[in-house]
Image (cartoon, rainbow, N blue to C red; front, side, top):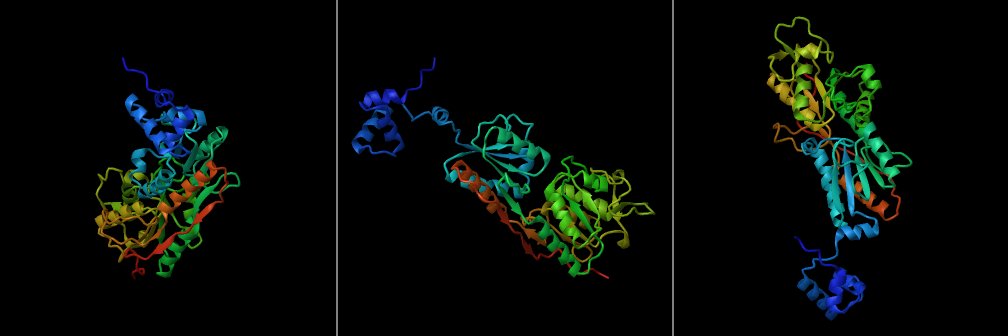
Length: 379
C-alpha cells in the first residue's frame, strides 16, 4: 500500500515553525531567516516532502496555471504546418517565461480535451471558422479570458490580426506588373469541408474561413474575375493536386475544359494514377497565386512533372514566408508573415487578461519577398 503524501503541516511541526512560515521558506518570497529556511528544508528532506502539492494550490487559488491553445486541426496536421509551429513557438516562449503551462486543444469540440471541459485559466483560439467562434462563446460562459489569433477583430474579443487582404493585393500587382493576365488562385479551405475543386459562386457565398476570403478579395482588387481552385488545406500534396488540374490534361482530351472548371475531378484522380500532358499554353494560366507557401510548392512540383518550367513558362507566388527548400529547390516569391511574433503577441495579450488588463488588438504586416519563381510573361 502506498503511504500518504507527507504534508506541509508535518514539515512545519518537525521544524517547529508555523505552517505559514514553512510555506514562505519553500517559496522564498517572505521574510524568513536563512537558518529557519535551512531547518524547514532539512525537515522536508527527512519526511521526503517535495513541496506544496500544485494541484491543491491550484484549487485554493481557483487557478490551474494553464493557458490553452485551441485549434481546428489535429495535432498531426498542425505539426505539418510550419506557420502553426511558428505560432506555437511564439506562444510557448511567452507562457513558459510566465511560469505557466501550455495545453493544446486540437480538433475543437471533438477531442477528449475541449474548451468546454479542459482545465485552463485562459484560451488562445487559432482560426476563424464558425467552430472557433462557438468556442469563443463557450469560453465566455466559463468566464475565461480569450484571445483570437487569425480571427477578425471584434469589440468584445482581443485579436492578433494580419494584413491578409493588402498583402494579397501586393502579390497580384507584382504579377500584373510582369504582364500576366491569365492568373489562377489556388486557395486554402473556404468552409472547412475539405472540398477540392473550383470555387463556385454558391460555395463562395457559403464560405466561412475569413483568411481565405480576405486573401481572395485582395487578389480581386487586381484580377476581378480570377478563377479559384480550392484545396483541402495547406499541404504540398494539395497544391500538387491543384497544379495538375490547372496545368495538365489526360492524354487524348481534344476539347480542354476551362480553368479551373476542369470538367470533373474524375479526370484528375487524387492518387495520380492518370498520366497527364500539359494543357495547351492558351488553356492554362501563366501565373498562379497560391494562398500558402506549401500550396505553392505543390503547384511548382506539378508544373515541373508536366515539363512546365518555373518561372519561364509559369510564375508562382505563395504566402507565409516559410522555408520550402527541403521540398523544392526554389527561392519562392511570397509574402512573409511574422508568425512567431504573432504567437508571442497573442500570449502576452492572454497574460494581460489574466492580470486584469484589457489589451488592444495587435495588427501585423507582411513583407514582400522577391524570389526566383516569377518572371515577365513569355510571348
